[in-house]
Length: 270
Ligand code: NAI
Image (cartoon, rainbow, N blue to C red; front, side, top):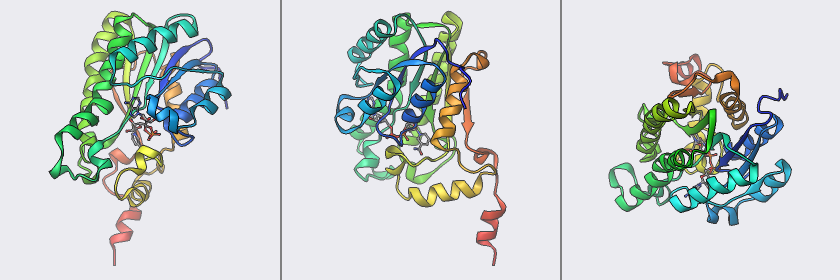
């Protein structure tokens, strides 16, 4: 159901790779709610992905940008304002990649060049995106910036590897930048800590299937899907959440505050 919550609002959506991507579902929901946006992804991901289909169905233009490259980001921000005809109201950072995970390097055997690359893509890129927006004065007052994160930033999940550290950094950037963006431009900055979700990035994590079933059984409301996450993001882009900022918001069916569930106890009872 659509409520016109984003009528007249303009923005940028990072990270739609394929129809499973959280950013893909979010773009569709934002479109349904009347928002207009530029889609962006790393040039290499675009060649592999199906982003053109999404652009067509949402009436959007695509501007490629490697989120680790400041020139690309500055170009993206100025082109987006040109295309959309003014300043922006929302930005979604939905980007993550660990080279150590991809190459099967365990947390106790990191290759630090891989670590640095993964940190740049998954964590520092959030600062870079916001700094580009901030310096270009590209956000309207009461605009909203959202990035996606995972509870491995607070608790240990062994196979999440160095992405746990990247997410901790990302969440810290939301608080730190959120202060300046709020104080000086009345822009809010939050992270959504999402349930495990079957996407390309999610399935890169070892043992993901067992893990997603465990989370499902541990969450009183069940796992939040990518579609649920899109809905939540729409609410954070809307005018109904104007004073929510610098928060890490758990969107996980209650997983983060559950000690144990009956299903998990039953699985261990004789
Ligand atoms: P996805 O694989 O569909 O999206 C990740 C995106 O990052 C891709 O579109 C990829 O092209 C983009 N990307 C990688 N390097 C880039 C670069 N240098 N510049 C620009 N873009 C780049 O997977 P998903 O799951 O939709 O991931 C979105 C976000 O959600 C990530 O931050 C991820 O960590 C987070 N998240 C995912 C969960 C899951 O279980 N899938 C759970 C909690 C958070």
